[in-house]
Amino acid sequence: MTNKEDIFKNLVAHAKEYGFIFPSSEIYDGLSAVYDYGQMGVEMKNNIKKYWWESMVHLNDNIVGLDSAIFMHPRIWEASGHVGAFNDPLIDNRDSKKRYRADVLLEDYLAKIEEKIEKEVEKGRKRFGDAFDEAQFRATNPNVLRNKAKYDEVHARMTEALSANDLAALRQLILDCEIVCPISGTRNWTEVRQFNLMFSTQLGNVDGEAGTIYLRPETAQGIFVNFLNVQKTGRMKIPFGIAQIGKAFRNEIVARQFIFRMREFEQMEMQFFVRPGDEMRWFTAWKQTRLSWHKALGLGDDKYRFHDHEKLAHYANAATDIEFEFPFGFKELEGIHSRTDFDLSNHQKFSGRKLQYFDPEAGESYVPYVIETSIGLDRMFLAILSAAYCEEQLEGGDVRAVLRLPACIAPVKLAILPLVKKDGLPELSRKILDDLRFDFNCQYDEKDSIGKRYRRQDAIGTPFCITIDHDSLQDGKVTIRYRDTMEQERIPIESLRSIVSEKVSMNKVLRQIHKIG
Ligand code: GAP
Image (cartoon, rainbow, N blue to C red; front, side, top):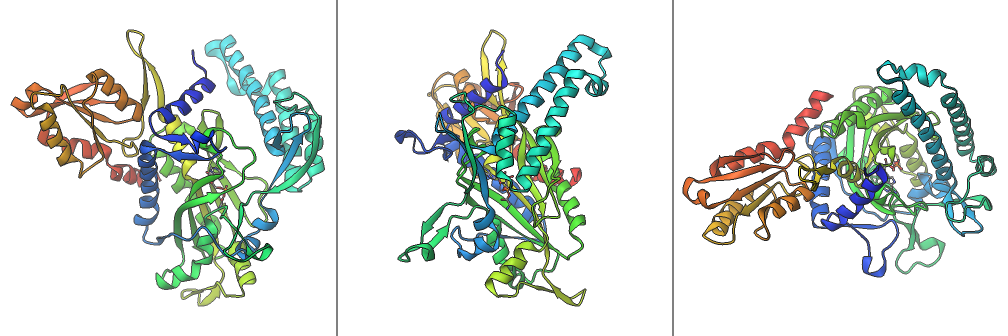
């Protein structure tokens, strides 16, 4: 039986083998935590962007889009707090010379305790069978209770040290937990130091500090500094939102888990500007809307959970993460934050320009409050890919690697396969292709046996294959094969467009969001 770790390794290999994701600069041995999207990856990524953009911008009267530049005035990052406080606490192991994020070492330690608890619960389940009462077991089993107490203590000390920015306390906790370097196996740790995550470069011919500019670590600031431009030119009335999809850059020290944590990645962010005092209502509403957006894709409702932040950043008065069950556990997929008027007020202060809105209903001017929804596009890609990837045991011992992607997200919607490369079948197939390619992304394949071609399409998640055979020339029908069930049926060529269009339609999923919401 393959375990979760092996499946994840297979998934990474699969993503490369089928043209979804390549390591960047591979012929030069790669560049850590940077990836390229291949021919399938780019299609799928574009579909995810479309799903987000349509739901945010096109389906809301009061949300508009923006595409701001990556380079911005360096003072912006002082105003936003990124120059002073966008840091990770790092620790080095003197023996292996490897550098780690102190908080990640502790999180891994906590994850191991959680694992022990879950194993104990599983043991209990096996032992007691149908009579098993999980809640009672968790509340009374001595091993579970001991581990839970340990977990709570370490978690509380870590949270306190992080929020107080107490680096010595973080180091002490690592020592107290007897955490060893995974490479050297020793506890020979340095002090913990802060490390700024922003990449910097020089602007044109301006030398030294004056010419230093940053690659944006989030897209949000481009929205804040354009708040009045958009509000005035779009005659927007509060509440309203500005949405943006774009690249962000972070010099992540712990780069791992494939495209989960990258140094160059894309964000899909929306800032929703509201009247001060209304922010909690909107925060709650956006939490639900965003969760519905995720659930409508049908990856499984139990794969999501909210993680409300207990300790808030100084600028936030509420924050939550939507966590997704990745192959390596529940992790943050999207953040929803109530950011008060922190960003706009600071930009006002640092730029000396007013960033206020005159509210005609209230008859007053104010700096709006902001609810932010922020999701990593690459992380969303990984969430979908990992939920879709399946190694299926077939009768006869064969294993089928199939991507059960939501049809509207799949890179190719329909594969057109002539049974043989002769007798007029390629010609009829190409005629069908030339007609349908205006409606959706199709792929034509005439190489190898039909079985092998089906497998190739399963591997890239194509929801439908059609086979054109000799009978097709006579009866005008083709065989359609469904990816998930592998069932086949014969249908008239003229009905192909409507059958496939209906099934791959993004509209259907978008309408679902409103039903779930
Ligand atoms: N403007 C708010 C903001 O940037 P964040 O929690 O730092 O908040 C938002 O990032 C989202 O961006 C995360 O939930 C995650 O999906 C994605 N993200 C953050 N850092 C990332 C990285 N290094 N690689 C891939 N995605 C990342």
